[in-house]
Image (tube, rainbow, N blue to C red):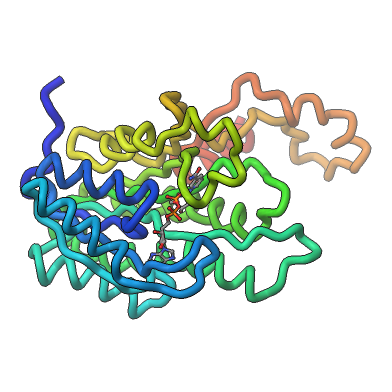
Length: 300
Ligand SMILES: NC(=O)c1ccc[n+]([C@@H]2O[C@H](COP(=O)([O-])OP(=O)(O)OC[C@H]3O[C@@H](n4cnc5c(N)ncnc54)[C@H](O)[C@@H]3O)[C@@H](O)[C@H]2O)c1
C-alpha cells in the first residue's frame, strides 16, 4: 500500500496537549495535515486550565516543519465546540477530520457518585463530542468529505467506579453509529477507538501493565481511521500495546414466538438458550438491519 498522506487535510484533535491526543496531532502533522491542537489544560480530574499544554504541542509540530494552530477552548460547552471548529476554518479554511479525544475522570462507586461528577463527565466526553462534531459535520457535509474518530473506552464493558464514564463512552458509540448513517451520502465516515495506554490518566491504575502500553501503539489505528485510505465506517476498535481488534454490538438470531398469542414470562425462561444463542447473530450497520430481520419473521 502507498503511504498514507494527509497533505491538504485539516484536522481537529481535542485534548491534544498531552497523552494520546498529542501523539495523534504529531502524527497527522508529520504526514502533512494542518492540525488544530485543542486543549483546555487542567488536571486529570478536569480542574483548572492553562494554555501551555496545547501551545507546547503546536511548537513541537512547528519545530518539525509542520502546520498547527492552538485552541484553548473547552469542549464542554456549545460555544467552546463552535470556537474550536471556527479556529480550523479561520486558520486553515475547512475541517476534514475530527478526533474527539478530550476528557477526564471522576471515578466513584455508584452510590458515592455526585450529580456534579455525573454532569462534568457527561459534559466533557459525551456532550463535548456533540458540541465539536455538529459544527464540523456542517463543514464536512458542504465539502463532501469527513472523518470522525470518537474515543470510547473498554470501560464500556463495565468497570467498577466508572458508571458516569462508561455511560458517557457508550453514548459515543451511539453517536458515532448515527453519524456514520447520516454522513454516508456526504463522504463522512465515523468510527470509535477504544484505547488502552499509559498516560497520566491511567498510570496509577495500570501498575506494571502500563509498561506494555505506550500511547504510540494506539496512534496508527487512529491515523488510519482518520485517513482518506480508510473505507470503514460504523466501526469500533480496541487498540492497546500493539494489539488491534474490532469491537462490535451484535444482534442474536433470537427466538420468534409467533403472533398467535403473547408469550408468558415462563416461555421466555424456557427459550432463554435460543434468545441468547450467538450462532447466526448479525452486526447491524443501522436500525434498518434489525427491521429487515424482524420483517423476515413477520412475512414468513
Ligand atoms: N489512557 C487510556 O488507557 C484510556 C483508556 C480508555 C479511554 N481513554 C480516553 O482517551 C482520551 C485521552 O485520554 P489520555 O489517556 O490521553 O488522558 P490525558 O489526561 O493525558 O489527556 C486528556 C486531555 O484532555 C484535555 N481536556 C480535559 N478536559 C478538556 C476540555 N473540557 N476541553 C479540552 N480539553 C480537555 C486534558 O487537558 C488532557 O490533556 C480520553 O477521552 C480518555 O477517556 C484513555
